[in-house]
Length: 101
Image (cartoon, rainbow, N blue to C red; front, side, top):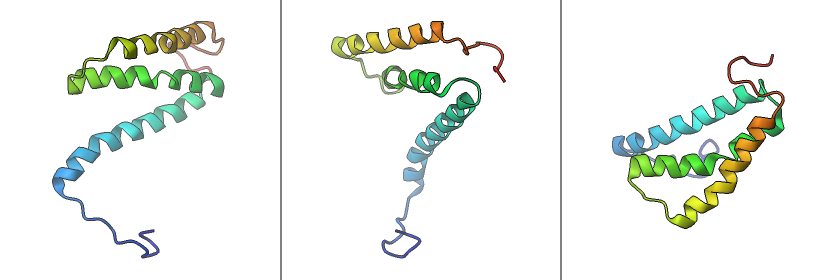
């Protein structure tokens, strides 16, 4: 839209950029590590592990924002963490130390 001049390019202040930068860095790291994982293990396993994102969202929200998760939220994380742990333990191509390639 901006390249076609259909919408004006927004002007961002330094304060807005300071708030966006950590989010952009986190997103970039997630993409980089996902692509690295795709080269080391099966695609299905990569996406199984990515299913643990809600756990890390709750963890980081508690750490950085001081949010205390409700018992319902914590309960909803149990099958997620359990499933990812079970899949990790039974994944043949998984190795903690050395890439499989």
